[in-house]
Length: 131
Image (cartoon, rainbow, N blue to C red; front, side):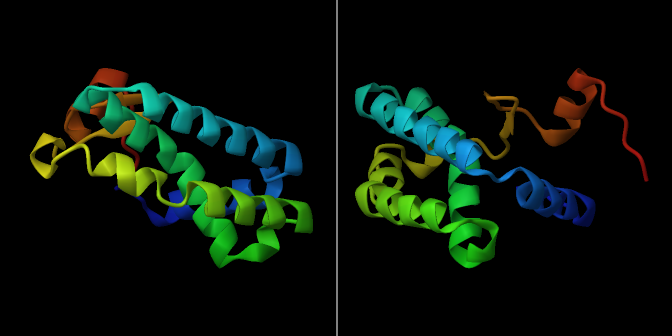
């Protein structure tokens, strides 16, 4: 995964400002939808995409676990319930995809999994690199 200091600072700023009960509930609902899809998918490609698409929710869940001050009491209780009922989902589904299937580089961008080297992704999306 690629992060830089500016991205991390922005992530924590947004987390601090935008993490509301409504947003958290939407994130939990999204995660449960992925679990339902994960039960139905059969191909390694689809399983891999479910895993990658779950990362945003898992990252927020992990941040709340590590820094509970980002959440209120209701969100913390829901996170505990989510963790207890879905704890093994990612591990179980990951076992269905062997390591040789994983691409060396993949990017989760705007809800899509893109298998491309980072430099190619930047070129395709016409992003400017500012130093």
